[in-house]
Length: 209
Image (cartoon, rainbow, N blue to C red; front, side, top):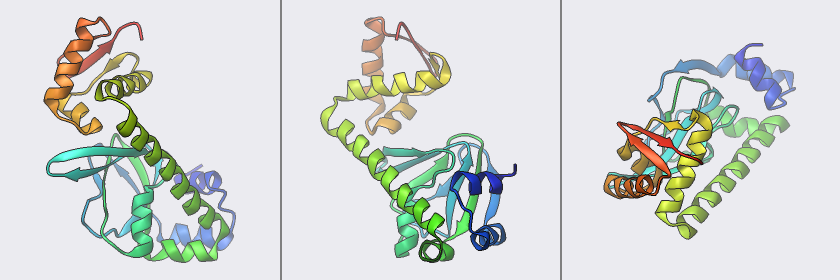
């Protein structure tokens, strides 16, 4: 099963004419870690759908970052999707987190297909719903949890993907959580003294978690 067939099956795209449109106009690409898919304050030319890998979406203001969400396989960035409907500049950055396969759809088709094809309308609507839920969870975390709790939650989540050893710098952690490197370093040192983790160079090892 090729990447387009994976997309058709996952999104339940059964309309032959839409399948043909996507095959004709969609662009398949493979990208290494660190490639910008969308840049803040620039117009969007493509709607990128992740097939394999993941994309990090964040906002940047005065050299500070705030993580919004990750785009996982068979999802798209709904804030980018919204920009394609209104033809305005992107409010966010989006960058590949690892080796990532994307199918990119030219923006001129995104809105048009939503009116013409039920399966594409369902995909765009579900993308907005999923993103709203992700943003609500991010807001609740920012509003109601202290930075130490958010940091440890992030480490626990990352541990599940990396078997207790999390390869990340203090600066990168600060960017993920929208704070400063100094705050992260202080909190990590405190957690190490409490016996919750062990610090290494650009790596954190969780203990008994």
